[in-house]
Length: 298
Image: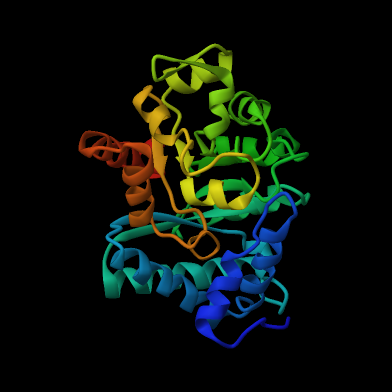
């Protein structure tokens, strides 16, 4: 695969530019990053440096996502991929500190999610703590992968599903009611199941009421949501903090740090600068993140 530039800054800018999910540009960017993670040494190094970067940003606990079946182009087995990532994570913890685990992603446009689910279950004691459905949301509802989700629900592995970023409210309903998701990736479109009154999102749908009552964590990624072009949400009108004020269990996340050109500390700063995040709400976000760990949800 041809690299668009050998200049570090130009390459960083290229990754950030034109990542519209609607036009599938973000997935083309992933093709570039994935292409250099096809051997065990490279995969281990990336995982190791990911821990280094997170600790440098003040993160003491993290769950890192990747799609293991995307790293088989040079004849690694899926187990060898998991082993390489886990070794990198463990080595990073030894050198930099913190506590880190991984979430294995199945790509929802493919039909191999059960294979990924089985891999996650097999590696529960090998730094794998969760399973996720990622990839293009629209036209690929979670229940297409109900078999994989059922396998996870019957195991010790945590289940999170990307829903409510680039489709509509029905995808959150499907993830929660049909697939028993314990957390929702993004999920801000839960507002479509609410009425907004007196600065509060009040559920007027079964799914929004259930998510609120059960305190299902919403893994919201402000910069990524704004940048992806998957919806009309902007930095000024993103509902993350209003949902938090309304009692929903919101957590802030970076999504892909490279594509969104961000890190978790920047997400908190943006929430403060644009969305009226104050000290008390900041503390609530941190408490929510602690509560939402997959080490706590099983």
